Length: 210
Image (cartoon, rainbow, N blue to C red):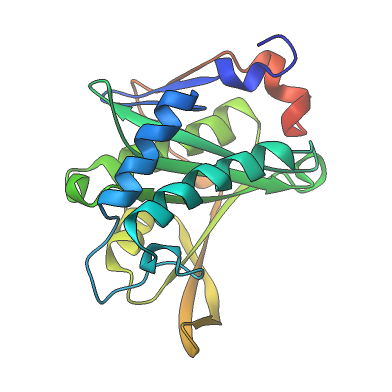
């Protein structure tokens, strides 16, 4: 799309492709949300959107993407990619930044359809957006946060080489819960083979990196 080149941005990995969703892919992602994102009795998100009924979860997924597209500014953006494996949408990976031109810092967030957990996809899709950030955008820092009981997320974070960056208290379902902060510096980033970014150059001004 000439006036919105982000739809042509692609990150490819040995097993995945990350891209801005078409409407059909967004509908498929909504189905993943309706099927379930995590086990019952556990809440990995600050906003407990997954407690809604399946159709409400699906609708919330679509509306969140519309909101991010509609509020996009070079100084405040959230790129939500669908994660595609073997032609099937399996989840979503976010890369976001505020005042990137000044801070050179990004933050990540993600979720996978529950039936795709435990297959190494979470690590590969996080590495994909870190590759975009460090190799494509010239980021200096990447940050992430997770509840201290969100062991899968913490496992991915530590595997990729983030350093602990303190603790904070967040509110989850009316209770104070510790969250762990992590930060990765550019010099700690270790690129892996088989990760490529295409269609980036026209997107740079929209990402505060032009």
